[in-house]
Length: 100
Image 1: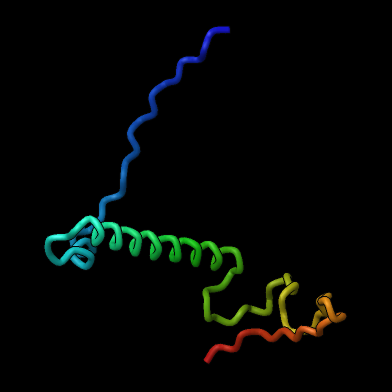
Image 2: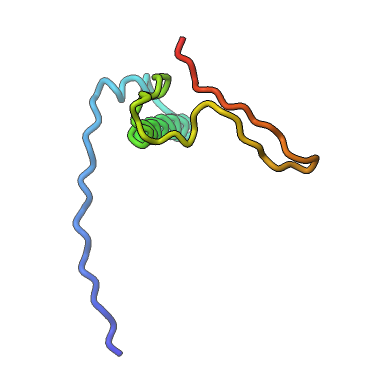
């Protein structure tokens, strides 16, 4: 059976990063450990922002905001549920988050 020939993938275009943002991470010569720490911190912040945006999109409201009661989904509102445990059922009371 002849093998398939693969087409080379086009080079991915990376987004440009503003100089001001880089200046916040770099304030002089950096060791390999400092470069790694800065890239890990940036990656963590980027992932947290992306997950927060995804959650906001999924829930329909931003973090810390009060959920609009006009939404039809009420699976996680105030009320009580029971949860099985080793010592019988536990009663779990749920409250809507109140904004301060």
